[in-house]
Amino acid sequence: MKRPKTSPRKDGRYSSYYYCPHHYTADENTVRVATNYFAKFSSKNGRPVSMNSLQGQIVCNKKLHTIYTANKSDLAYQKAVEIHLAKHERKLYEEKQARPSASKTIAEINEKFKAHCKKLEGSKDFSKHMNANRERVARLYILPELGETAVGRVTEKDLIFFFDNLHSHFINAELGDILYLHVQVTLKAIFNFAYIRDYIKENPVTAKVNATATDNRKKIKESYVSNRGKWTSETVDLVTNFVYFLIDKSKSDNYYQKLSEYMMLTLHIGTRASETAGIQLDDFDIENNKIHIQRQLVKMYGIYSQPLPEITKLKTKQSYRKIPISTDVKKLFLRIEAEYEEGLRKPDIFGNRSLWQNDDGVPLHAIDFSTMLLRFLRNYGKEFESKFGGKYQFKFHALRHACISTWIMSGVNINIAKYWAGHSSIQMTADRYGHLVDSREQQFDMSDVLQDKNNNSNDLGRK
Image 1 (cartoon, rainbow, N blue to C red):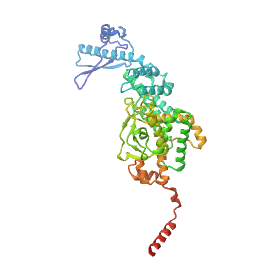
Image 2: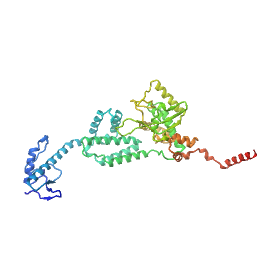
Image 3: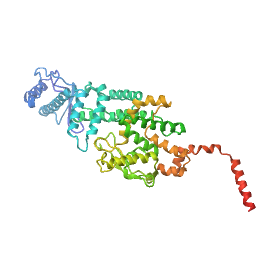
Image 4: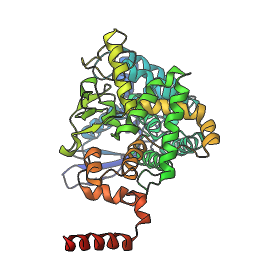
C-alpha cells in the first residue's frame, strides 16, 4: 500500500495524513518505520511501551494524525514519522504517569498538602495559627463531602454544586460569611497544590467556581439584619440587651470574657471593629476621661502570606478623634492596667500593651471575635431570643450604629456626634441618624414658642 497523499502548505512544507501506526495499518512503510523506532527507543528510561510489528497496534486517543515534512522524499517522511512517534510516546508516558496521581483522593492530597505546610511552618508564608485554621476548615467542611472523591474526577460542576450546598448549610446553621471564605480559600489551596504537583492536568477551580462561591458568600452576609437601614429605639434596645446578656454569661464562662469586653467597649464608644481591636492602654486619657482613636488592627484574612494582624493608620483625617469614656470603660481600663502591672499580662509580640491577645501573644482581631460570637450564638442564642423576644443577627458594626443612635436620642448635638463617630461629613450623620434627633421635639408647639417670644418683647418694651 502506498504512502498517504501529501498536500502543499503555505510555509513550503507538505502535510501528510495517515492512520497512526499505533493502530492497525497495512502501510508497510509506516509499519517498518514504527517497528524500527520502537525496537530502538521503547526500553529507554524504562518506558513500558511495546508494539506489535505485524499490526502496529497500541492504545491511542486519536486515529488520524498529521505529519509535516519538508519535501516528498521517503527519507523526510521516515524522519517525520519518527519525530511524531517520539512526541506521541512522551505524551502517552505523561498521561500514564498522571493517571495514578489523578486517582488519589482529595483526603490523600490534603494530607500531602498538610505535610508541606508543616515544613514551612514558622516562615512568613505559613504560621501555626493559619495551618491549624486550614486543617479545621478542611476537616469540618471539605473532607466530609469531597474527601473520598478522586482528585482527577472533580469537575467544575461538582465544585459549583458543593458551594451551593455549603451555602444552604451555612444559612440553616447561621454560620458567618468569613468562615465560608475560609472554606473557599482552603479548597482552592488544596487544588492549587494538586495542580502544581502534577496530580491533575487541569485545575477545576475556575473563574466560574470562584464567582459562584463569592456570590454565595455575599448572600450569607446579606442574610444578617441590614446594618444600613433606619435604626429605631427597639433595634438599639435589642443590641444593648444582647451585650449585657453576653457580659452576664461571661461571668460563668470565661471563654467569652474577651468577647464581652470587646463588644461592651465598642458599644460605649462607637468605634469600628478594626479600630476597637487596635486600641492600646496608652490611648486612654484617664485624667480627662477620654480615649484617643489613632490606629486600627487589620488582617488580610484568607491570604496565607499575611498570617499576622497589622497595625496601620486610619483611612481618613476625620477618623482620628477623642471620645469621652463611660464609667464601665474606665473600670475596664483600670483592671487591664492593673493586670499588666502585676505581670498577669505581657506586651504583645509587637511590644504594645494591647487589650486582648491570644495564647501566642498575638493581638486579637475582629475575625477572632467573630468566631467567638458565632459560638456564643449557637450555645446561647435561643435563650436570648426567648428572654428578650428578638433574634440577634447583627455583626459588630451594629454596635457602632447602636452607640451613635444612643448619642442622638440622648440629645447630643449632631455636630458633636459626627466628630465622635469619625464621619467625613455632617450629611452622612444626618442621613443615617437624623430621624432619631431628640424625640421630645415631637411635642413641639409653635404657639407656645411664639407666645413666649411675644412676652419677652413686651418686657423689653416696658424697659
